Image 1 (cartoon, rainbow over the protein chains, first blue to last red):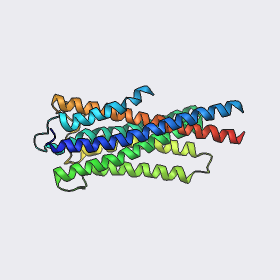
Image 2: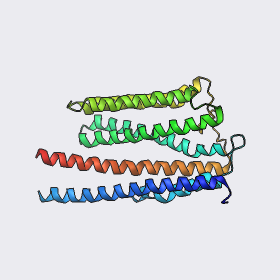
Image 3: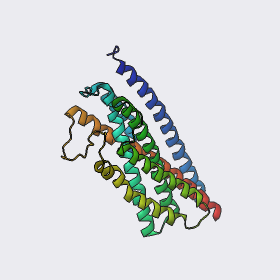
Image 4: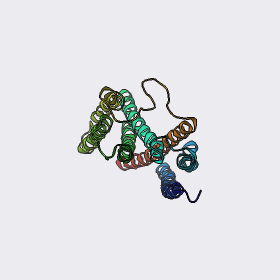
Length: 45
Length: 220
């Protein structure tokens, strides 16, 4: 399997996906946090 | 939201299936594997434009929640635009491998670029009308017209003129010309990319809602 050039393509694509997934996860988490804080701040107002 | 987060697991599985599990196509060989990314990405771009159009129709009918509905339509169109660019890029790579050139002015290639230009015009219109209080109405009407044009450009124009493009999934004899493993992989990735679209769409809508809430609190 390792001698198959497609295996290297698979690894490269997988690494790119991991990068995108990490970015998405971080953005999602930050936005959820901001959403919560904004809702609380507006409720206090 | 949990359903959309499944994309984190489904995408690596899809990548594995498309690159290592599925056998290469008869004539095109391994180059044909780009199909498993090109078709789902093209599907998502179409879906995103349709959803943007539907939100615009709802906005024009209900005329309530205007900033949020306007943002929802805009977000979907923006994601659709990114996926359209990806469709053109993957299509061009495939064209280079199978037809010898990145660009051949094939009816399908040309129609997707026209669609892309239509949506670029939408973003120009949207930003040009920034201070116009009727922006929501004008941009919604534009998106609805674009939504009506999209199926003509994607499904009808390439069938009217002779095309080099391979038979699409929805073809003339209404049969899928793919063997079982290819079909499974293709549909798996169509679902995965749809979930990815849904996930990004949810995130962008959340962000838009925060901005709208903050703006309205400043107005108070």
